[in-house]
Length: 424
Ligand SMILES: Cc1cc2nc3c(=O)[nH]c(=O)nc-3n(C[C@H](O)[C@H](O)[C@H](O)COP(=O)(O)OP(=O)(O)OC[C@H]3O[C@@H](n4cnc5c(N)ncnc54)[C@H](O)[C@@H]3O)c2cc1C
Image (cartoon, rainbow, N blue to C red; front, side, top):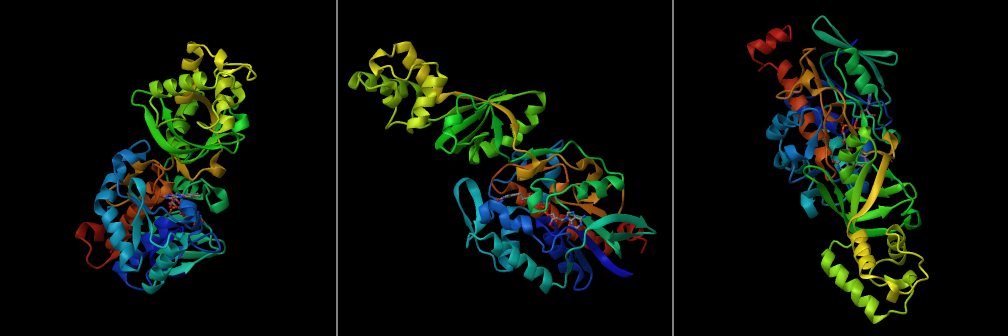
């Protein structure tokens, strides 16, 4: 049976970085990367709409979620954003910063990120085998037996980097959770995150396909707000601000429908909008309500706002609008309530909220507290980040920490305690 120093299960973002880090320390021929798909990094290629929003300058505790978001801190301290950029720069990737601290490859091609990761892994002597679905990881006499189909491999250490359940079309699956559960780890409920939201479309159905720059608010003790292009769809709402808030919404949906408020005129204070509406009424009192808002909002948005506000029929003239009705209309456009009833599901989600309980892992090393020599990293753990590059930053930081910790455990420079644990 083939014997390896580190066996990595999963050739995605975290697995590739774990492999590079481990091989950088151990030298060639010691790290085996097993990937169930025909190629590594399929999901990575789809990130950021093919542009790969690989990190965010603002990566920090407040952008991560899970039962214990603080679990991310040691990995982010050891391998912070700057270290990620240096890591990539060393093997040729130049990055650019866009709005809100979002970082991308300068070529704006996710394929560039994957190509460089693959080339670096190869240069360092990582052995990558695709079409190998790992079905069992069994600790045995101080090492691990890893089974993939008919083949079995022996590893001194194993890193589980099998990702989450989101986006099955891009390789998302539950296998990583199952492998870790078999080893005694527990999982929290899985929920789709960074996902389109289903809504009661009674008042927005005619808007399907319309995009409006706005602000979306999720009310609560400390309301969450996101600005950007809101996309109305036949099932509900989508677009960057909606996707960003979806991780918070998805967690609240368990308790029932959630109301989001849309501000479709964020550049205008409500009073100013009201003055504008009154002015329009006075200037053209003979216009029908059907076209009253044309020029200020997309035609359909105006009509839907009037209907949603109960200002009907649209054949009425603007001159018939009472001051009260104008106030109601301004309020509707600034605080449009949309009842969210669900999400577009795990298949369409970018990230999985929930996962393997982090309490079972040491955040300083990513090593399992239950099975010495076993490591976990990336999305398989109960950590999810906000939209904007935070999930990949977690994959890079946790992957590198797992890779370097595993290598350290078996490298000749290990401490006495580590040697004893490793049976050396
Ligand atoms: C459409 C889309 C766009 C996204 N855009 C962004 C973005 O711009 N910025 C950002 O930060 N995040 C983004 N994400 C999220 C980000 O891609 C993930 O959080 C990240 O890839 C997780 O890395 P990972 O290594 O944990 O898992 P993955 O990258 O999913 O890799 C896991 C790998 O393990 C393999 N595997 C699973 N089980 C086994 C097994 N039993 N045996 C062998 N191999 C196995 C899988 O095939 C897969 O290749 C996006 C996600 C999607 C779906």
